Image (cartoon, rainbow, N blue to C red; front, side, top):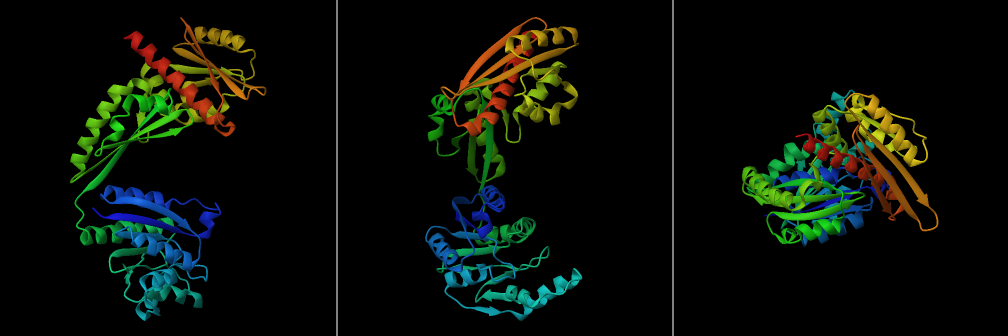
Length: 391
């Protein structure tokens, strides 16, 4: 199967002024077509550096796709860079200029003189007409082997051309018959090293592949399969996912687009519970995460109750007086002496109180995400156990 590399062009990307969403979309689209992506690179608006990157990529990849740098200004260097890499000159294309003028006319606009830059193409390049924008795309060949595709940086235009022009081109040129599919299992409650102990041997498999990615309080398990059809790839993934789930148990809270808050909301609805949350003010981020999916199920109790034990006592009274309610008490304390943070949690029902204390000494910037993810998973696990006891 062909190998691809992606080059995202734009100094604004390197300066962090805008986020590169094009590479993510490209990677997923190429993956679904069975194309392996070995490298993705960001580069500024410099034609020499861009052409050097294209030539380097041509030594490794069958397909090189660039995004950005096709506008009408002097700092849009992709056309010149592509010509340098292809070893040719660029020339004005009157037919292409006519297409650009026609697009401006349809938008009731008049092209400026610098728009003519967009009508220059490397010799031998083929135009990819852009009906949703003013920047024409094109493709050509580098080093007599690698297909170079240059797309606009505007995401809406790039995505349209990718789907309607580039993918059909790649399917024909490379006789694409395989597909790559992926599923991500989301886990919480244990660290990456523990998950690795449980499924380390599965991570050595060649197809499907299994990989781990850690976030504050969460570990993702990605299962990826390549096959001649989507159905076969999905079956391969399903079999591997079953093996993974058998090993790791209920630390898996969801898959792909699932979130911890959606998992908690689902359990609240299944048990017909409302949730009362109390704490010392540190629970505000947790509430913000839970409110969109569970706004009708949540009640906020006094958020400035101290100490934690008093908060739990008052919460237990509130739960006892409510109908079909459970409670979550949360408090986070920070120690400057040892730079450790202590998270105290309590799951409250009319019949019991389950408490847990957790220490955290990781990066300060990760504390809010870690605290909320850990608290949500504490709530999820206890809701699961409560539901199982009822049955």
